[in-house]
Length: 245
Ligand SMILES: [Ca+2]
Ligand SMILES: [Ca+2]
Ligand SMILES: [Ca+2]
Image 1 (cartoon, rainbow, N blue to C red):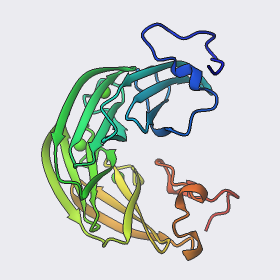
Image 2 (tube, rainbow, N blue to C red; image 1 turned 45 degrees about the horizontal axis):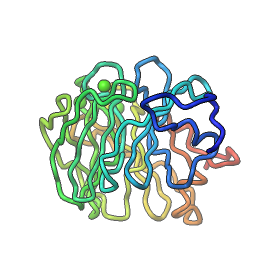
Image 3 (cartoon, rainbow, N blue to C red; image 1 turned 90 degrees about the vertical axis):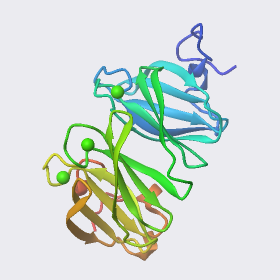
Image 4 (cartoon, protein in one colour; image 1 turned 30 degrees about the vertical axis):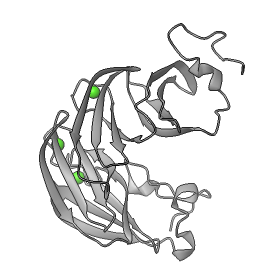
């Protein structure tokens, strides 16, 4: 057994800490969020067998590691957001058959689990945010044909699904953030040719669409390892050498 940074495994837990500092490749970091509401962002991981786990963080240290549950390998953790407004990040999962579910979290415990809806497998959960500025976290969806839709949520219930626009299948939602500080979350998209655009949103309406820059076709398909869009500011669009396009 790998050496644990905690010295020994906790009872009732599956010795998640023993995975650290080197995780087996079957574990993937899927999302971040403040799952226990202590103001510090934690890390959500999922195993290829479906097992979902949370690391509560304190600075660069894992303060607590817990296995949450295993919904099975057909369920993937897709996003986080505080859907029930308790100050703790919740988990959005999607099944390979399209079903979307939300786990309201309390640290590494599920306080409530709800299936939201099944839009079919061509729709993917691609983000969360408060797109209509009503204080309730919503879901951002994209179809394989390029269509972008917002599910306005009331807690873990779908209150309204709105198809926003279809920029074409070559455009992919890359991230979200409130770039114009109007309290409504906006959408960052990237084209397969490298072009980056922002949609300033008002609920399901695009208030303003901006073409920002094209880092160049040589960056095509290299978004992940080389380019980062931080959710808070497009000024943080940069590559590893911190050169801005
Ligand atoms: Ca919550
Ligand atoms: Ca909302
Ligand atoms: Ca905004």
